[in-house]
Length: 304
Image 1 (cartoon, one colour):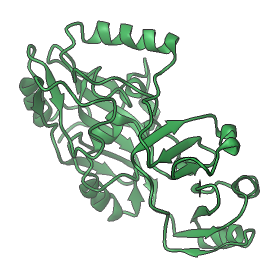
Image 2 (cartoon, rainbow, N blue to C red):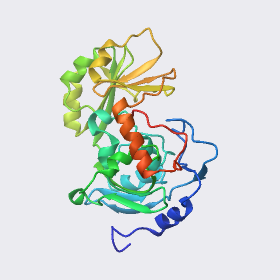
Image 3 (cartoon, rainbow, N blue to C red):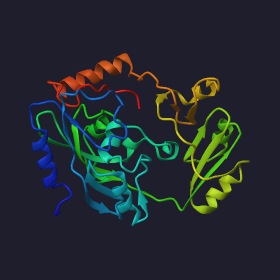
């Protein structure tokens, strides 16, 4: 492709498929299909374009179709020692992960997934192609529509193409575990990738240069672990990180992300609605961008 700004033909074809009239829902890997509620059964299913369209290792950016599976994205980036830390099932799609807006268990180190997005092309409710952001870190300007689209469950537009910021694959990764105070661990370490806690046991992920990881590990009286624990998937809520100290071990089986405030539970939890003020604002944005309610009807945006 001659220009990073050129719209791929696949995006034009997707725009035509979305059309301008009937209700539609975009289908990816269905790995988080029930988040926000199942789409209305009358909605026509469409799939976003798939494929890696450009990877600039020197610029540490990758451009791909929103329907690209994470397995394909990871395989391409790994050839150049790079990654995008989405931490979701390999059959999940890039667009699906961004639409749901839930970061993986390494958010403590790498931040929210919205921070990895440089540019998005989406199809609006009129079937038009809309571009927001820019293909490189240096030329992103104007309204940050990209951040608004992440976590919107496709209700503001159908993601068609994304440009992401890549990160180096860490030289080494170590998981440690043991019964200890997770908040002391958090205070003692410098930029751990993850600290997980089930009320009794702690799991810590350290990543980076080998010497740094070994130095950090020596600060902890923990044993080696093969990886993280099994993460409950029935319920998920978000709280202030400091509130995790008040969690009770008598409740459902849960895993908390220390320093982040996410609690994963084996019992369904009521969807966390955004605040009344933000909820009203979100509904107004939806009304303006999708006045006929044809994009992913039935879904409702919840806290990530």
